[in-house]
Image (cartoon, rainbow, N blue to C red):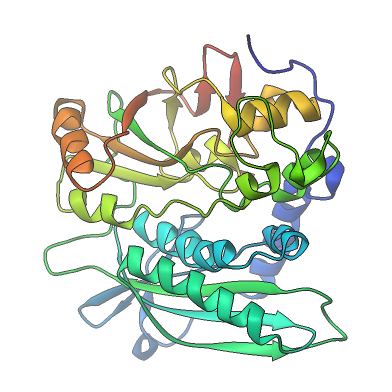
Length: 351
């Protein structure tokens, strides 16, 4: 049985309108346009990608920044902070991994109304766990006490990555028709779509303390599951020229694939059927498939696009690196956008 065909609830209906965000972002970028002198490095043209690239002399570095968003409200509701500490590392290093960069350093930013040593200690433990998985260093950060600005905890970070000798950025430019699309499963909803997921879970029988059918943990704990880290997966395959593109399936769902290369279609003809928390969210919230696949990762957190004749080799390397659950989820075809033909879904772009 599939997911609901008609939308009962959408991300926009709970206050997150990605179309409006795209319009606002275009306005911001138009006004922020500035070309720094060459002595400050040369930005590489990669608009809309997962991380920004900067060439400084002979060195190319990657930069990305992100926050845990409203997953922090769930942490506050349950008074559990280690999970989101790990999240803030993973969501950033995964974006670095999506261009083939090796994480080097991270700085965090925490805004809260007053200092709470217990919360900060728990965040610290979670951040350490994330750093260990990414083999990345925390080199600084900012903790701001702003009671007039926030009444909870707002957590974000910025990460820096680099390309070891002999490794080039993986931008998607090499993707061609016929390439295989491999998917590495997620650990759950990660840190995206939580405004919608929280509303659905909180309004279900039992709320956050309730357990979905087939679940083994309370819903609140299941939604708090930290984002899976894909850094070691990319380290295992980034030097292979048969790897043509990488994508972190985060906010925007499967539409993230359109950020890799225009003029091609990403045919997701073997994406796994939704189960577990995703099936619960769709059925309980009466959310249509079209909305689910453009809001949540739907079970796949990271994608590798590679030459089809090397897909077995790439899968074996991923398994050896600790990702034995990798599976083929589709192929690259002519056209444009992202399609899930079995479900009759099509997306023109990311915005």
